[in-house]
Image 1 (cartoon, rainbow, N blue to C red):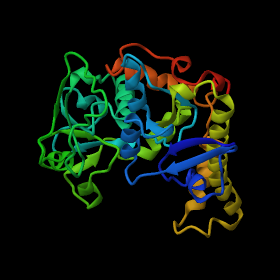
Image 2 (cartoon, rainbow, N blue to C red; image 1 turned 60 degrees about the horizontal axis):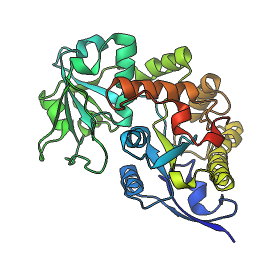
Image 3 (cartoon, helix red, strand yellow; image 1 turned 90 degrees about the vertical axis):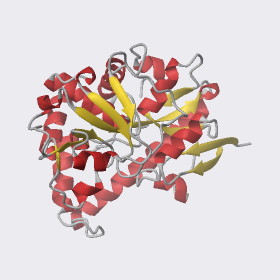
Image 4 (spheres, one colour; image 1 turned 120 degrees about the vertical axis):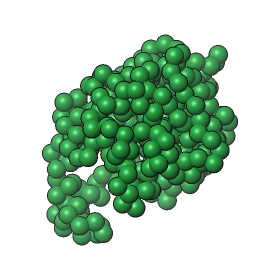
Length: 330
């Protein structure tokens, strides 16, 4: 008889095969769900709705400071992104280089230390000497007001000024008006997309900065993992089947781009995509979106260090603390 499992992930192209039936979890009767907002999946997982689900790294790690951490992770990374591109500035704030952020008021999307915030704040500290205690922080929604996320622990380091924006305020509008000097956000402010000259990126040629960062570090920053309820740890066959299914779905997405390369990706609506694809393969390799801990340990260890340094984890966690033991060798 098949094991029953509730599973949720965002419908990316590399998870789509789990939803459309091209990939099934061997030996498992799986109810697979998604949601319009990935944060809804996080919230529902934390509220006990799923057995296995995608979780933002910081949302997952914050649970390790609870009396009984409820989850462990599989080394599946459904969301990853370079994040020099996530830092925006008011063009009248006198911010010409990263070091100029010291002493400024900075907005941050959703919570102090969202996944797309931990990475750039860590990079700012490591490479430019700008630490979180040197700035003032305002939390909120980028283009739509959002309340504080009361369903996740909200650690804030001592000595750091953090406040939530007013109920009717958005960080994008505050940035454009100069009420805040900069913004770190997973979302691009709509005003910038609309051509506002009052907002700019801290790294104007962010692609060059991000490619240079990868060449120097080998890190393609993961944002999310797949979490499993701790009572499932030990059911190795079940978890291996989940891991294989995610891997197979991701490989199908990668192989589509590889197979389309000889025809210059004529199935896509994006011009010059083939040259981008070739450049990415030269830099990132044939498996440019790797799962497994071996290919991602440096990135995970770096995120764990950043999480602790930014006051979001009480202790410095290791990969051995957070991943299901049977997957440490992947």
